[in-house]
Length: 328
Image (cartoon, rainbow, N blue to C red):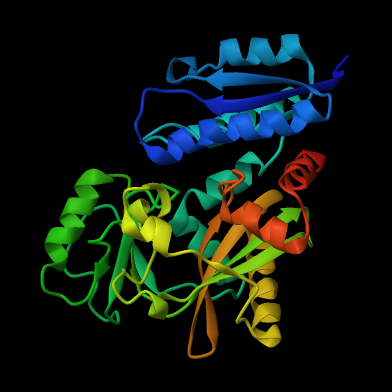
């Protein structure tokens, strides 16, 4: 029988210096502290690259521990985020309730081209673009510059850098070839939507609980790029990491907020999201565009997700507890 007080926290463990992966390990300690204060038995379960493909050791460990729930922080490994889907499938096969999104939603969100197609079929606007696995001809013809390029199968802004914004056709071929060499599974080339960027955080199951709405006004940061890249999200040595902080709920007209929440909610439902997730959007000429649906946003105590929770009135432990409550 499951131990009524035991929670397993699953997380990847590998040799890496990538800040986004190390940040997940830091999150384990934050979550452990929350549950320890509640008197729950908390145990981390580290998932290693050598555990794949069979995951036999992990399977046996979970079965022997018989946890009430799994707090799933496993996000794959450096250069192989797809393992995240495989691991969620294992938890589903074992019938153990776990936090976050199911494997189908993770797989959809981690394939940005398929996610865009699904959203577009549901009538949700996404930036015009093309999916590329090789460079043939001039796929940017007919598209409106500036353009934006990003990997199709990564998250956490991996592969998004200073060269991701392409202002004109000069030099575009070299950029695309470089990105394809780095990410051979494919890249997305999209029309860049300028202006303010909005993020809507959700917890729970449809129709979801809105955690909050954040906004970045890039016009206030004229020396910075008009988008968040990997360094500005994860590297403390990057100036933008400290300078560009989203504002919470302020400066957003009520009518716009309502539209943002409605569009973001529909995007989450279209991709089968549950547990917790974040939707990023921009607006152009009155039309909202979904840029990305993040099925596993950072939930550290200093994360944007946690800040949205505090703005709503939740303490950090309350945010973590609500995420665990919706484990399924």
